[in-house]
Image (cartoon, rainbow, N blue to C red; front, side, top):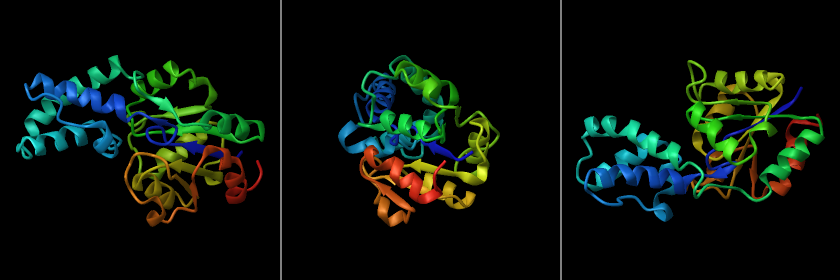
Amino acid sequence: MKTVVFDLDGTLADTSGDLIAAANACFRDMGEGDVLDVKTDAGTALKGGRAMLRLGMERLGRAEDEATIDRYYPMLLEAYGREIDTHTVLYPGAMQAVAALKAAGYRVAICTNKPEALAHTLLTRLGVRDAFGAMVGADTLAMRKPDPEHLFETARRAGGDPALCLLVGDTNTDRETARAAGVPCILVSFGPSGDDMAALAPEALLNHYDDLPDIVTRLIGAA
């Protein structure tokens, strides 16, 4: 079976607002106020909690203070878990495209570098967890993206053939994962990562989810 595997943050949903809020909760606890801004730092938010803390510490002139970053990382995850869906929204047409792919016979799954429990909580609160045949997080396996086995195991858990999958993502990590796996990659052009998606040379760019089913068929054939 052919499988369409999605990244989560910045691909299916814009999660940057809640991620930035969790990081700022840490900086407020330090007595520094809100150090990060959702409009300008969304791309960093999608690189993970430590990346956000590190950026904030750099702005505070404490770029080498890894001990503080380590101390506050669990607090960031806790704060994010409490308010995981306050600002987060699914991208327009995302779930309609997922439904269309399933109706056409493709398996669909999520492969994310977000911790599994947080990913499960977010998808459940958004009401879409059951739409995906599998969901594999950063800590589900011994490896994570860009290791291709993270993608392959996701396809297997969805009931698909790992050799017949493709990855829909929004970062260079997703591009490198697909390249290492030897499968096509579709990168969304509307995510907040801030990277030039065309420069990453994916097999296709996605400007709107309405176009996804046709692109998938073109890249890996009908289900």
